[in-house]
Image 1: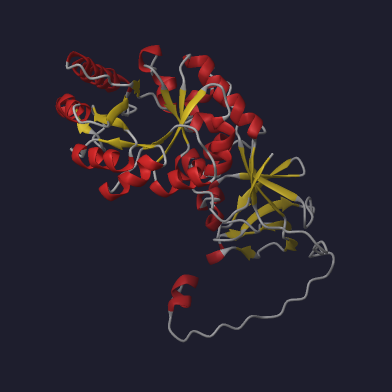
Image 2: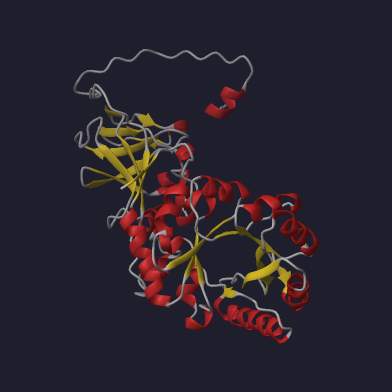
Length: 399
């Protein structure tokens, strides 16, 4: 009967004996005497600035920079500081209350939109910190009371569901909610927003629905504030009619095309602003017929040199990388082999030890052939997963 490693380790009382293996210098290379081999993330500030300028050039509109989920994996605080300083960026947006408060604690003073759910007892804190909540339910009483207690106006974003079906007041009920909010003292609509469905044909109807809401608000004497809906994806699907008063972009600011087809569209010159790197931790030669990885996922057909990198899915490097991704070491690309474990990745070097312990290995960065889109195309991992799943404990360096 065949028993997998995972099944074996789950058996109670399992005893594991680890054999001692001696390697000659020909087989295993000696590690450097000092220096961390652990993975790190680089944030390219110049590329963030370039990408923001590209969005502003294409749209001619101010940018609400979406830096949710820890700044798309780059780190919410360094990303906020860089983007808030760009002339085309008018405000920032996050999803979690904690991220919004972290930014204020870090001294980021730019206008800040909170696009996630908010418990009513948190309104006082948000208003005191000048954070604009997104609203789509009848919370006017709670907001008005918070405004009175804090002495601060409740500047809110009215979220309309015009077809996505995720969150937002249904578009047929949106005017009534907007009037209820605006008629209360201390509440101001800073903006009215919705999210497209990314179905190009249907989104034209979605836009029509949204604009009818805005017209209804104005007819009722309610200022809708800035209208915004266009995401990174929308910039490649729809024209200027979707840009409204402001665009609300995320992924393109980090220099990554949301879909492979958009890369060749020529609308924007995006430059990836993120790199994931580590140093080679181990290099050895395995003989023909030997295997590597859990459940012998890789079997050598000839004598082959392989390298171990101390980066895995626990750091955000996806398991899917073993299905075709390539890692750059010393200017050459080497295939990921076997399986990506929580903390390790194996790459095949070939007939010679083409890398040494301590050499920098790049999982992805801004060079052609190593962009996140290249990794995505090679192994099927989503570019969103490549960025947003980057481990929170991996050090970030602004370069």
